[in-house]
Image (cartoon, rainbow, N blue to C red; front, side, top):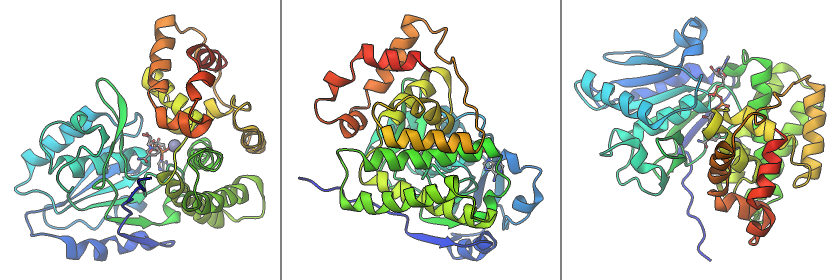
Length: 360
Ligand code: NAD
Ligand code: ZN
């Protein structure tokens, strides 16, 4: 047995209002006045003074707004890196991502690509990154993905949707300020929150489970139940708890693996551009067979919060399109092995997978 030696975020601050400490956190990390801090910020905040005016800009520091309408692409990472190299006198002192999983992943990828030659697509995979990234900081503004703790940055490239998984990927610093999530629209809150819930179910029922993963996964699941099933929490308590659930859920899968919903959702995402959170919900809703208790509870939460999920996504797909989705999903062997055991190929045949997609 070769146990994973897993890198963690080196520093983390938690608390409502802790975002205001960003300036004092960054200050000692400034290399010189020509080496700026670059803030990649979700463009949903472009007109939101409350978040942007608290960004501690000095010298050559810059804000670059990023759209989260689509998940990050490798070419988008490459063009941002080129822009930064061409427009600043020196390599930045750091990259700070302020946003959801989309922007956090962009920030991680850009920090890596500023010190590594070639294109982002060359590093999609496991442990392909040779040089340490520049200093990078994550400030999540929506909770659930666990992107703030993970050792990956999920990117869609020309021929695959796959993360840059490396020891250099995790943030050097994370600022967990639950107050930043207070204006997340309800449906999005549910979709991204359910990403966390599904991480827990897939981790806790998987064959890769161990006590490390279990201890984080159980805590995250307990928090998710408090948030999504009970009426006793104030909005502030709910925001605080979801931020910590996301963290613990991310820690749980870091030392185990996700499962059927994630494998199938990657297929939907690659072919149809369906985003991670909502894609996971659409898929998980049909997985009673694999996760009976988890799906029953999911349906209860969905009903309680009046969430409608799109249907008929795969209704008009051609055989070729089904094949693309099936290929993408089946290429994720560790996810299937975790979910269904070592003889997963006899359980999840192409026909079986197609019949599941046809329901969606
Ligand atoms: P997101 O970043 O895609 O954002 C979803 C929506 O919420 C966007 O419209 C965004 O503008 C909006 N939003 C974010 N914060 C807001 C706020 N405070 N107020 C109002 N609106 C706000 O959402 P996500 O679900 O956090 O991230 C999904 C992405 O994360 C996908 O690209 C997925 O691949 C990635 N992901 C990465 C990991 C990882 O380990 N690296 C894990 C899971 C998912
Ligand atoms: Zn996920």
